[in-house]
Amino acid sequence: MHTPPALKPALDALAQAMDSRFDRLLAVPEDPRRRLYEAMRHATMDGGKRMRPLLTVAACDLFRVEKDRSLRVALAIECVHCYSLVHDDMPCMDDDDVRRGKPTVHKAFDEATAVLAGDALQTLAFEILADEATHDDPNIRIQLIQELAKAAGPAGMVGGQAMDLAAETTTFDLPTTTRLQQLKTGALLAFCIEAGAIMGKATPEQRTRLRGYAHDLGLAFQIADDLLDVEGSSARTGKAVAKDMAAGKATFVSLLGVERARQQADFLIDQAINHLASFGAEADLLRAIARFAIERDH
Amino acid sequence: MHTPPALKPALDALAQAMDSRFDRLLAVPEDPRRRLYEAMRHATMDGGKRMRPLLTVAACDLFRVEKDRSLRVALAIECVHCYSLVHDDMPCMDDDDVRRGKPTVHKAFDEATAVLAGDALQTLAFEILADEATHDDPNIRIQLIQELAKAAGPAGMVGGQAMDLAAETTTFDLPTTTRLQQLKTGALLAFCIEAGAIMGKATPEQRTRLRGYAHDLGLAFQIADDLLDVEGSSARTGKAVAKDMAAGKATFVSLLGVERARQQADFLIDQAINHLASFGAEADLLRAIARFAIERDH
Image (cartoon, rainbow over all chains, first blue to last red; front, side, top):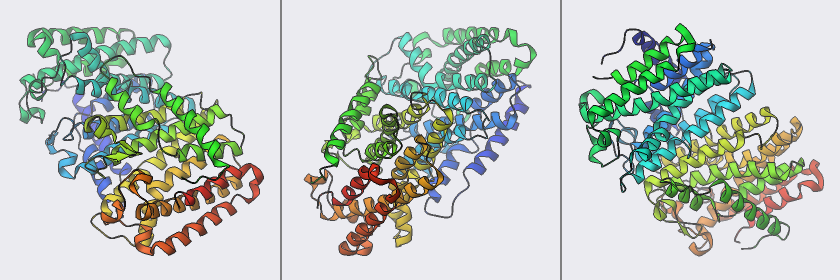
């Protein structure tokens, strides 16, 4: 996988930090809950690109938030992301056997354990944010919880997943597909950036700019995913190729074609980076992430 | 169903208040998320005894908490309870077709929608508690969120459900069965009472007494459920009879026998009521609930 040089060390350090935090968070108890915790570890550890934690930490870094705190917020967000993958992979949903080159949770364990592991990871996300180790100021913690709940719930991620189910029986037009993606993946990605603004007590103007960045990045990220779905190989993406297309799901690529979809992603990334102009060099990591989002695998 | 006179009006008023709040909370949007919201309404409205909301409101009443606020806390707890039922009823878990005389969510809708409706209800619970309408003081809201997360997560309800899965292949002894029930149902019931103490800024001494009450009530409640499982009819309980026994799950009744289980429940209820002595007449509703818990249906 091609990664811009500036990003590689940040990604490696973060992957290690997340794994060691999940290891501590999910210490396996010596009782009959053992299998539940093992499933939660399977779902979260040694996991993927850690794009959401990276965005979270990068946004927190803009405001010089203490690393230990920004990693806690990143951990909570990754709990939500991983829970959604565990449930999404289940036979009644996307029915995927492989994720990140490993068997999915319901394959490695069983469906009942996958349901419970996902449920428990969602709960943990809110528990992590509510803890005073995340921030001294309870108002900051409350804001994080409110915004995460909006981003993850029926007005956000889960709402997008519900639209995705509906898309299996109806064909959506481009505005509806855009909205689906904004809810399903955009809302949680946007929260990563918003969390930085909340932790850093950003000014309203800074928040507006960061929201613009997050909005454009989220859409570009999804288009890049759709392109990978069409062009990638199972070995590189770790999931069956063109699965979404085969399932008849609305994607940007199926609606726009490969060439126009790629142009649209490039345009969105330029726009995302423009939103960061006033932040100077401290936003370099966020700029590198934006470029990385559309350079994955091609 | 026999209900002590003092409890009937409180239960009826509460059932109505909960339904009207769920109706407002879950207004169905005119977009492809329609089915998700309908499933969430199916899971929550016209629902059961509302034992947890009743306990919550009764505990809040001890401290004269504003009714609008105690009902918000009750609503959040009921979201968690209902989400757990939706997931628990799924084919990969308990595989129940009927709940409260209605088809279960995965039967009335489909399994994928049941997964998402449960997920969304859990998120909503935290969103409701985080909202300032629940309490002016963010520290109170944070405490509610922390304690709900503990009660609902892997150290509470979901941990108990995981033990329940393990119990299908191993036979647990009485202490392990007791712990299973404390996690699976006791933790959330205890949080209902704890939430009242948090909202009412109870003294440490008051908290200790209320925790004693909640602990004993939770166990008695579970024994009563086990007795209903053995003795009840499907028409009265709305679920298949002796299903837990048939599944070989550890229950108090299978371990102690009907007579001793009933004696144990009676003893626990007396003990629960004794914890309330210092609260005077204002705890009458909590006393009536305790008696009701073991008088259901016999």
